[in-house]
Length: 256
Image 1 (spheres, rainbow, N blue to C red):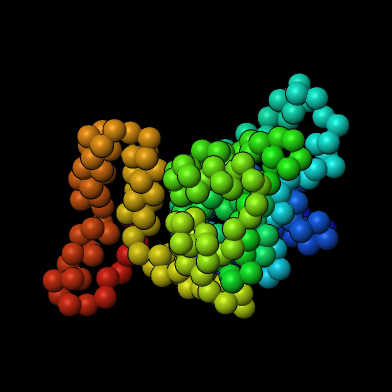
Image 2 (cartoon, helix red, strand yellow; image 1 turned 90 degrees about the vertical axis):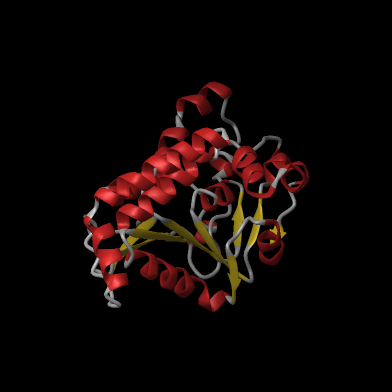
């Protein structure tokens, strides 16, 4: 059985399903490799403008595969080069929405934080419990979590290993919105389809500038924003969007 599945519907949206329900979608080496391959392919697929990542109705991803790590040496861990498998997701240029039900723990929480929008079901639980097995987050958990929720909320999660509920996660800024479990994927798809109808070059530039600016000074980030803003005036979609606005009609965006 494939550990991941990709579904496309011809509407500019692709769904990437994690598919190891028997292990609560523990992130095995094979699953990570498959995810990396899917995101590499989707990055250059001109028929896809937005991607939704989900683990299913009961669990997003319950972390790393502890059995595969328990007896490993530092050298063995280093030689796995798992950062290379995260890279296609980290650098994915198109909008990415995570639809999270149930557990998003450890690597699962880190995976969700790679998304641009997180839609959480009421059952969702987010946590970085690595400290409870003698280690620490190793795929961005100490860095992305602090950037998302601030030092004090992040340190509480990291040092206790205790998860937070979907409602708590929304209050601290870790998720975009909370919906009933049965609506999680459909709400994520609704957002994805809405974004997919908008100019894809503008959407990608927004993502690029937001992520780049987070690690720049304000002056540098404003320069990056200004240059990207100016560049979009060389696109057909800018001309079409503004013409449609002035002519009081629906725009026909083509991604050019």
